[in-house]
Image (cartoon, rainbow, N blue to C red):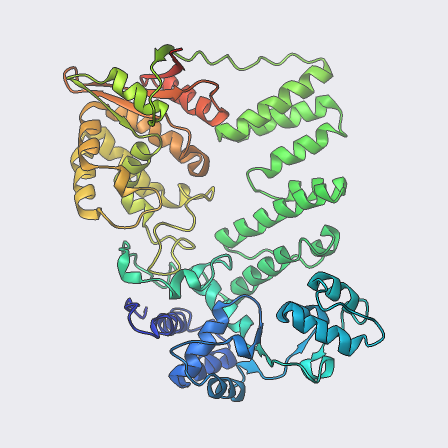
Length: 552
């Protein structure tokens, strides 16, 4: 059902247009039933324009804003810009005389042009030839700050012309269909040499389409527009235009994430009651913690302690549990209740005094200290176990789950850090753990490495994961240890992909290994590192901290 997208070489002066044309065809085909007849017609009209006109429109769509000076539209591949503008104007893609505010006009004008504009509009005031642009703007904007009219009405003698983009909403809808968000801009795709990267082919079937109904697209656009206005309007006003929920898990997640952000903004605006209401409506993982922190300021401590205990019984993520435990301890103490504190983490720690290297980092000094004939050390930090995770669970990472893949150029699923990532792939993930249990994982991971090497993967950095390291690590790390690491990762992929120990020491003589977190002078363990060390020690992994000081 999908139109393939073929990379266009950069030596084609219209390579960006070729890429955009393929995006349009891709989205017209994949979402054939979600376009209005008028939208479909306009996109077909775009594809029928002359190449220079299409190229200019794509150039405008890629630029910031919707207003442009005609004299700034200079592109080598479009020698006759005026003709292209006329063609686009006739087709309704640009406005030759758009209405604009004085503020927008000032933003387009150079400083010396603002001087001339000020003299025209404020003839009774005197302006120095070297007046600052911001002072000129301030003087101009005292009159009619919100009025809009064509450039000729503001300034008949303007030395430049302005054109306006009249199809930004159409291309925003196209961008949302292709990327799944409006944070990525067109330059991330149409200005890229697609052939420089390799991507895992994912079946983009009808069932896995992220958008199944036009109402879902409309809801996503509304959520984005509302978020854009958060800095301009009180949260109470924005809540009145919050779009209703739609029956789609991944869009519902975005809605709850926005509720959390609105709650945080309400806190900043001093509307605590509204902030609490929004946080308690939201299912975002941090919303419950924020709600409890607000309740700490107003509710009885015993009530807050009860709510914190309830949350601890329902939430698995260690980072969230750390915050909830702190709230519980504080509120319980105020209420005169006794709550057992979490046992202190006893971290195996070694202390070294080393000669300070001239250029290398502290990790390199520790590696040199411990290395010998049978012992090899690698500075792996988060890269080794994340990479092994990606290789073992590759089929799960690239499963055609709805809301995960919007186009063929993704290095990973869009829902990688959403709470429902693992549950949406339960069978494939358990298949990976079964492979660990039956001993086939070494062969599978090494074979996956050979087959997938070089394919873009957001959970794997190929240059820092040499085959030799993978082979040596798999030879000595027990499957039970890998399972413990992978299950901890899956509790919270966003936070747990960081904070792992710096070094791995592999002893080829004894077939053993250990993990070492290195701390130089003045450096201390962070919370996310402590959580990883606790999880590793709980499962019997050989992990320790090495505190280094330099010789005088």
